[in-house]
Image (cartoon, rainbow, N blue to C red; front, side, top):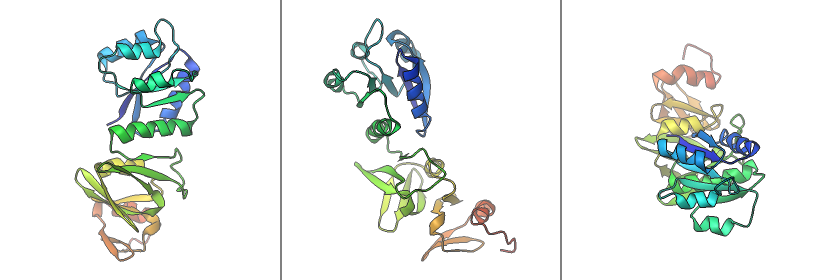
Length: 241
């Protein structure tokens, strides 16, 4: 399920920056952009909002005063040009306090704070899906601990219904997320669905047959429905297999 976001700022450029950053964050959706607190109140009354990006200095009502009026506010990330209100913001239990101009790297850290506290879904820490750089990784939550996993280390991923088990050379990590979700987050050039219950890291595939994929000594089933796409990704075009 996508995180429903609202951007509240009287400056169009500031709203545009936040919206652009969110376009690089998987499974987020900007449902409204508001110029002031009054517009935001209207949105909150009619829509479910998970996360607000809130400016402080706005006409009629400041962001912090607006936040104080809400009985059960959504999660909030402050985005402002003023340092002076940070303590007051954290006293209101905001997730993070960002100073303009907000870089994507700093924005991403704030979003990870949100997901670590509110969701177990992994978040890709890169907006580059085409290349698998050595430093590309995900965070996943196992029990109450957040684990960091480098994508290059993932051998394969196994479905456990509402959970998945991520297999690496050194570890096995179980997290509550469905395999279809993680499949959409991984770079398709480097990870491949071979069965309803398995995704493999292509760089780790060592052998295959018409009905199985091998990763070293591990043999995984190759489903008939995935066979054609798998062989194409493996660049094997002999139809006699």
